[in-house]
Amino acid sequence: MASALPTPAPKVRRATADDVPALVRLRALMMAGMGVPTGPEDAPWRDAAAHWFAERLPREDEFAAFVVDDPELGVVSNAVGACERRAPGPRSLSGLRGHLFNVSTEPAARKRGYARACTEALLRWFDEETGVTMVDLNATPDGARLYEALGFEVPHYPALQIRLGTT
Image (tube, rainbow, N blue to C red):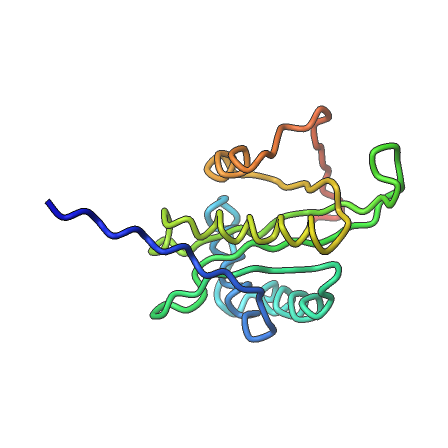
């Protein structure tokens, strides 16, 4: 009986300006999966998101996106993170905090470890290149298992929010 060949580790790379359309596409996919209506391909938010990503990608000391490419499909997975400056406290003299978001994988490429690989690359970036000591994220029920496996825990204080000036 022949044994299956091991699946090669995904090749993760840092996103560039050329990846902005894929970052927006994967953001829309993630939001749709959360039940957020994303509108048509020409919805105004998509252009705003593209501009936002393009503006931040060059800020390599405070923003990063990691992606996995498929030879036929192009960019199929990503994880994005940003550093946020908050008031210093006893656990963070710098007040620097990380926020991980926009973790998404194309349905045809799921269950291959791509989201995990992108998230691990992002956590290494936070740890090795930014000085961040705490990383926050918001998880869907599907994503929570991945994040818990990577060491994320439910915080002692729940996150609450209010929407102001909704349109």
